[in-house]
Image 1 (tube, each protein chain N blue to C red):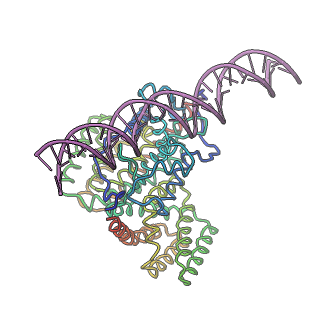
Image 2: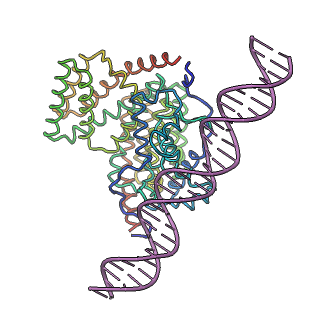
Length: 230
Length: 230
DNA sequence: TCGTATCATTTTGAATTCAAAATGCAATAT
DNA sequence: ATATTGCATTTTGAATTCAAAATGATACGA
């Protein structure tokens, strides 16, 4: 092996400073602590995090690359305001990726995997029955994550997460009031059945539709958010 | 509109320094000027670009976020060495996205759009007939890009490009010797026909298979590259 | 009164500096 | 001869500094 070549790059990677900052910024945006459409207060964040501008700005470039932040040259970093058009572009992409996760999951799923999804499904049904939306949402997300995990494609997970990050805030707001809860639960029953039957084509289709059904709710939230900032 | 809020963030965006550097680094990797599996020579690049370490390191963080560079804390930035497993993860994802582009393209395509793809197809056929591989590859890529363009989903294009960047070098090498050229041309004829017929489901399927058929060629190149570095 | 020009202040972008970590090398011990 | 320790050098990560651009406030003129 040559002097400067590395056979396989794989190490224990504790997060570096700027990665840590990227996570914190994302978190703050999703919590509304950094409101969409406003300028990132560079100085304040440096003080808050106890760091200098260098790692903060590195993190901002990374976030900009992900579309969460928009950099205006010489005019600062702004928290990206999603437009309804952005949502219309994002959902079909995420739908395709979720569909893929379903297909792959059906190829790989062990009986134990299916049992775990089933357990989560019933846990979610419990929260649904009790009308506990926050818990429902949490378990709901776990189901989709579990399917992604069964798909066993880390790159897919990474790409999906990076897209999900862009609409995380809007999704969070949309989840505050679910307006087609009954329908969503029915869809989830079909999803579970398809996975149990290892019917990849069907599961792909169901996951895609399930996601696209949320599109209008997210767009609605964005439009309201737009109005509130005028 | 409130003091710090921006209705829509949209401006003439001339590339900033670090963005320019990101492009240059990607270009150098795809050309083999920065060989896969080696350490990024920070100092040399600064000298070459005539910049300080700050914008270079910003660019490296962005590239790392895209997976083109791997950062080892306190041990420098390395040009990511794709594994066959990475390729197996990437191709289904890119296949899904190409499929989506085909579906959307069929919804949107005007007659002029189809005519343009047809023209490109014949141009490619010409290069095929003459055995001119480099020109064939160039036009081939233009066709896929044109379909993406017709799909009219800038976000999709952006995501696809970011993934394509990871295997750009390997694809470039694989393209040096096409080993199923006849089959690929036949597939392209079917692709054109599906677009003309506005058969989105079929086009999606064809584009996906067409891409997946390249997977083994890319893996082969990577394995050879691995061996050469031992 | 409203618009424009001037200038001080703040913010941004990028170079420089500085401390900590890693690397390479020589001396020593086994 | 090989492995281990200690030390000088290099590289990395992050703070600081500095110049350029943008912002805001005030004075001036129409």
